[in-house]
Image (cartoon, rainbow, N blue to C red; front, side, top):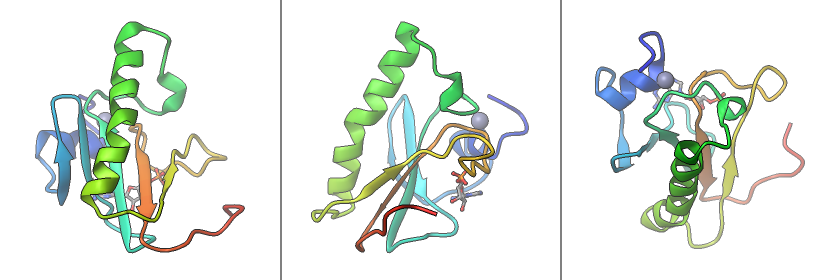
Length: 116
Ligand code: 5GP
Ligand code: ZN
């Protein structure tokens, strides 16, 4: 846990969140400022600042493999039967604002492309 990290505080329960899914490895909760009818964040409980900190270690491979395997499950729970978008912003140019690895799951409307 990173003491100054908002999402670590959400994982620990110190900051409340609208939880959608939780297991031992990951947490999914609704975004505070939704950009689509459905907008949730899927985070590993382990603090990793961004996708740039993911290594080829077995621990990271299992964690990220697990997280990715739950995307479909969470999308189904949220009723996203017509598709959705999974977004991972990284670093300055990627417009990442929270330095704890997270994936945006957006749906409930047709998305535009290319993203801004
Ligand atoms: P980023 O810009 O880093 O990819 O996304 C960070 C996201 O976290 C933003 O969509 C923002 O609305 C959301 N966010 C920031 N602080 C909080 C919070 O305290 N609670 C929740 N639920 N979402 C937050
Ligand atoms: Zn964190």
